[in-house]
Image (cartoon, rainbow, N blue to C red; front, top):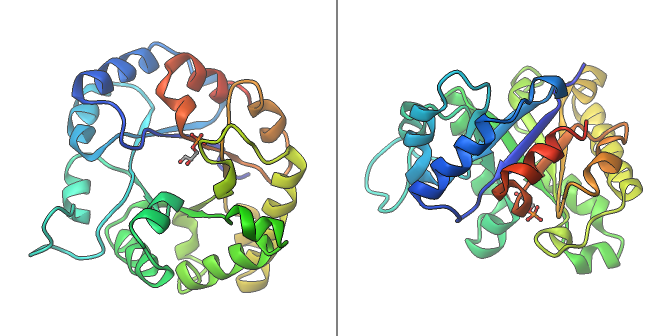
Length: 250
Ligand SMILES: O=C[C@H](O)COP(=O)(O)O
């Protein structure tokens, strides 16, 4: 059985006080019924305090990015070891905002994946097409290429540490969501590509999350699809009630 995951990507939102306030509100929620792994990805500056304040909560912590190097003269960057030292368990790699705004290439992302694995992180690897690519019906090719270039240097056993997040760029922060059928189609395709590259076990065991304007009013329908194993939530993860409602949509 695949792990079902709902992850909240706080992006560049929430200062320290706001982060702790949001965490405290989340800690009051009872996620135990949902049988879902709940992950939050606060900004770097708040990771340590969040970890210190998790107490006995089952919520797991992710970073939103990672640097591929060990240490040294990389001004402004955060190393894998630094993330480990503040209790980070997951790392998000290849978010479309990193790809588009910071020009992170498939090749760089592949290096980040290798480095993250070496340091024992679980990886949420993001893929997804732009609107023009979807209109040109190239979305299947686009995600396949992103997988091949960014992830498929891993062995089948290394894939156990990877979660894939499919996020159509045209649905991120736009209020426009892929229909549950569109999400199912491409998730099924991603699983097929995993089976072709690795084997049926890897395909069946890899969790594939959907991201892009998931809200309390559409989560249930999307999560009900066979190949959708959870969500990577942006805007709605900044409100504890909305995020909890999404988690409980399973
Ligand atoms: O990482 C999360 C995704 O970018 C989705 O963001 P959103 O829920 O605000 O559309």
